[in-house]
Image 1 (spheres, rainbow, N blue to C red):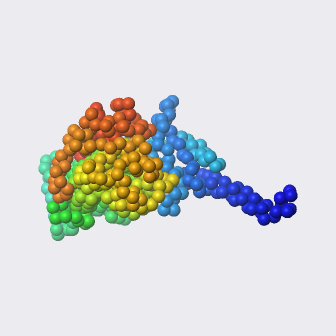
Image 2: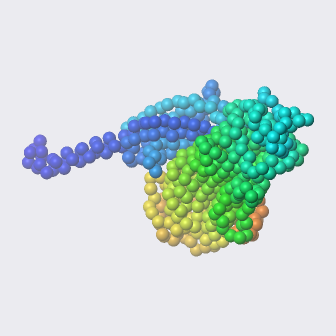
Image 3: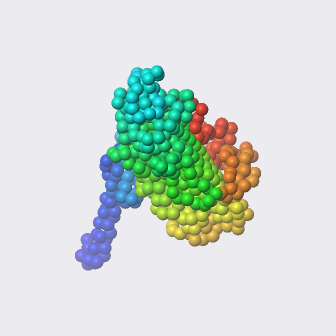
Length: 568
């Protein structure tokens, strides 16, 4: 009381400090807001808006189980996202079974105040199956006529459209259906009864270019061959964007934009297609033309495709998209381009070989988190990961990232927004593994348990514009990568046949670990990510010693995939 009377300036300072303390606490307290949950065939995504967490220490824990099961399983915690107008906790549960109802428990907490626990039930999407209840019709090339019987087939797709109903199957017999120009698919099926247009099996079914203008259309076993008179597209869409389209076992040849969702589309299933574009990798970098251009659309599964001689293999997902098990090689720009993507982009188990520029591109991110897991990138002309402008929360785990001259040669400081675990970073030539950085470690930075090979170069890293000779120097500067190791690609891999940078052709191979490599059992366990490891700890890189190698590109048949904390 005496202080207050006789030392007003001191009292005022104490009072202001007290108010400032309570004001900070009030700002830091987390208030949960709008909640959204969605799914694909193998994943569940969450976006949970919050406010008040100015110091970014709110936590969102996640558990899940098949509905009716008694055992909860841990998933990765939600990421705290404060980026590009998003203020939320967000994340994914991965490697789930199709068409299965899951119970998901989420626990939001903040030591500064604010909490909520909620349990939600959601079903993963179905793997599309051919309908069995509809009619079957026969079709041959032509412009009109026919009844659709085997003896009197419809002549042309337009004639067949006159009777098309959900669940119907149209058997397309050998011939060229594109002689009259672009073919339009305009009749919609339903979510459980697509209208199927498939090869009859008596020879090649040829289109030049098609437009999908209807929902739940299924194209299977068709050939799209570029004809200069009709433009360089294989397949495009029309407004407002068709839903639930299925593309399986088709062949796209000599196209520039092969599958192009130029006017939208949601929840497509694009698997087991072979795409060979018209770009020439021996001529150098070419930014024109895409294998599968998603054009900022959401909800897709893009898997088991074989893509080559295009600019980018797969590009521009918006949110809630799974991209896995694709074989991408000999491209003139990047392998997978997630650029401008928002929340819950999931890129796992792809093999990317001999891209003229970069392996996987993050330039730029418009939202987060992304999950980049178990990919093999081998010797792109520029970087294994393309980091040029804004990035945010990414779980980067179990990737084998091999580059001819430095896996990240530009803006590696953007990795400070990532959570990196159990990756292998290899420079074939003696070179920095991470280079050209500037900026401080921030609240997002979480880098550890990675393996690095910079050859005999005098420096391992260039971070914050400081050249660092080895891992210990990086640890001392940043406090990150405290369990990292140095490896040697000359002894660590069973196969390592990379004779030169693009356009040198590189054999498609699995860069699997030699059991004697120090990267074996050098990783850390990650809930819902690597629960199937065989040793005392998971191995670094894309492949676990003792496990069978994954399959990339089209499968011999179209199976119903069952995922359980792993992938085929």
